[in-house]
Amino acid sequence: MKKMKFPFSDAPNTACFTCCHVLDENKPILYVSHDEDGYWQFLCDGNHKEEDARVVSLASILSIDETMSDLSELDYGEYAEAESVTSDWIVRRMDK
Ligand SMILES: [Zn+2]
Image (cartoon, rainbow, N blue to C red; front, side, top):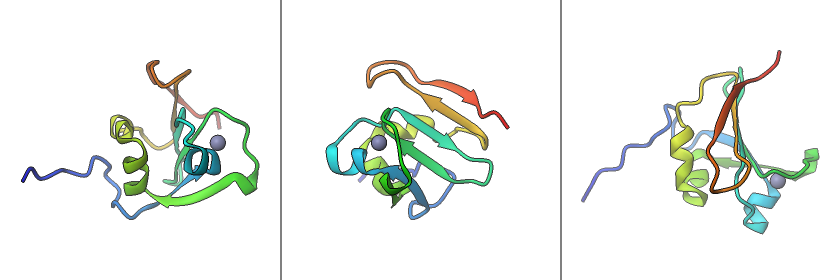
């Protein structure tokens, strides 16, 4: 059996944020950020209120969208956006 290496430097059970649209409505993840304080966020392209936030593990994000492993190198304070599931990710630094 091929041993899969977990792509993130954080543990698979690390808590991260996503939104109810991704979890409940199968919306694609089009915004990923890695905050200065280490928190990951995986959101759709909609508008988000506080009550839309959901806490899941990094492992469950990968099971929702395994291509998120492409963004595992995102540095602290960086975020990546894509226009659609088929477009390339554009990585930027967050404004302070
Ligand atoms: Zn959303």
